[in-house]
Length: 374
Image (cartoon, rainbow, N blue to C red):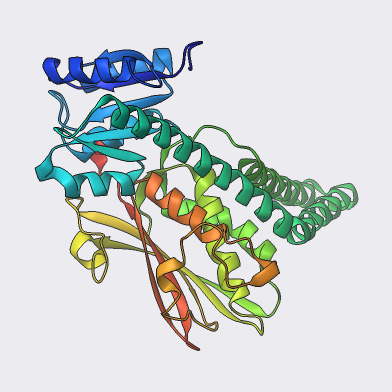
């Protein structure tokens, strides 16, 4: 955490000479920082766990890790930590990919002085804080929009519980009583699942990334989706490929709800909303997008609507914070938060739309192999 004199920064760099220069740059100048150092990934992760620095300056190529895998490991250990990536002239494209994955800034080796380094750290921290506030503000927006639908869903659950309890009381024999008790348990589990999902949206806990199945994620999110859809919108789910991915289930609920709310608003007169998940190879998922990588398989979650479509002129601005075409009805936060969540877990998002013919948002998440899961 921050010291009395300023920031605490973890410097992860295996070149002793360059690490020495950076350490001096961070400790001197307009805004000096307390500096901890690590020369490899294992030491860096341990330092993060013990000291919880305000920011990390990270060389991607270390003795025990290389490239974007280094960044992914640090993000997995501390997803809320602002990270500034160090890179050489030949690795500028890797730096851009690092920003997409969740780094806040990058510094070019050989073009640094104390003021540049300190300014990058400060901007990275401020950018991360702004992003976190954006996510929290958007959660409040979702909570307001969910209120009526969730009240309806809870009313259904409570009605089922009350009805099942009455069946238990009126049961004529043990078999009828057992059947009624099972209905009671099922309704209770549904209510518990719904309340947990709401709590995961309302709170702002640390990101709890875990290996989960896409089929389970969509199935668990179905209650919340149904809660926000009017009777004029028909929900179709499937096909749903069961692909293991690594992410926070609570943030997936938020991502899915945002896309569903966006689709709902695009169909003011009603229509059809479809949710599907497919397993796709990298070259297929990368078609007309920037999804290509070394990972062999992706889970592609698609949310499609039959609504009004998106004007091509505004498509490049869809994921900008506070950009909205809904006037007073929208804050412009939903899709910005979707993009932030997708990038946080190493994915990407692609939009296909035609005016008057609907829109499809395709979220591409890296699949987890059995060896990686172990």
